Length: 163
Image 1 (cartoon, one colour):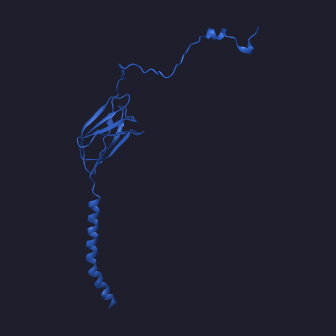
Image 2: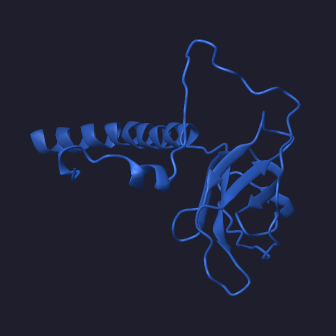
Image 3: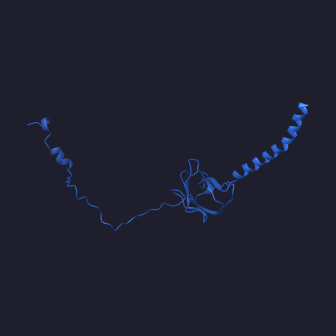
């Protein structure tokens, strides 16, 4: 009889256990839902060599400000936790022209790979002209004199001089 009671008890308890298990699965999936996406890729030059330390900026009308990262030594970059929407990537690196990639769509839970190739740029010279007068330190009084090699040669050498 105890065997019969045990199997009857399990039969009554089994639907409750199944409902509890399904409920736990549902609650776990609600908390695990993603709300952002990401973007990753590699920055290269025209020959296919990677470009380390290139600055990659992601802009969107959804973001407050920009997200910025630099490529690692393998030319790799990655943005995580980007709200879904349309993005523009701007890449700058020394010796290369600035490159823009527009219309990149970020979707929830996706991490697309966007590889970028930079064109070699010409050298640029930046000259900064300021109308401000140079600051003069009025707290110190220093006098400097330049001595030529002739004066040094004609100077007495202390105990080593011959008389």
